[in-house]
Image (cartoon, rainbow, N blue to C red; front, side):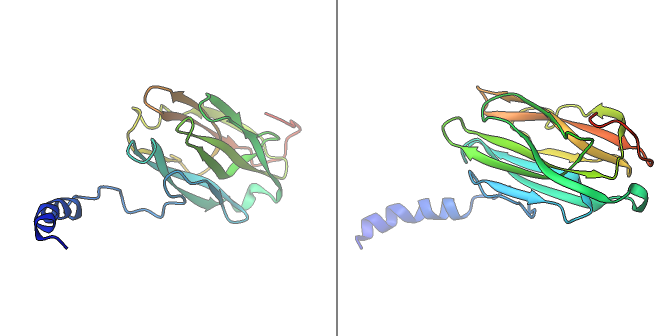
Length: 191
């Protein structure tokens, strides 16, 4: 190898190898620009979501999720299904149909719009119904920040989300829909 070329490249290599990697150490379910399918174990529901944004990686996010068993008095898990899907680059609002709660998420990245499509995996327990529902503030608070949702209290469940997409910043903000669920069967089919 030419010694002049080696002398020129060594400082460059030292700079690259010495750069700080500030990606939080998490059990990410995806890699940059890759799809993923995450489902909670049978009888559990999604209770925490965390994401990390990178403009250098196609304006994409790494995602991690946590689940928790539903309460014993919640009733039997009667069915699960994949609910509505959004289109990349579009705003989206989705609440689990048939009184379901979110027990999983799948997503596919589309490089043409630097965004993802999303779909919730919903599960229904006996004939429980939602009540005391509310939306969280924007998560993340500002585009391109880390985002984190932890269900604030045992007994609340994620039922869905409303998300907006910035075509300029190529990122999403989320407002998650959180609800309590009745501890008795009710007659309403779809709230």
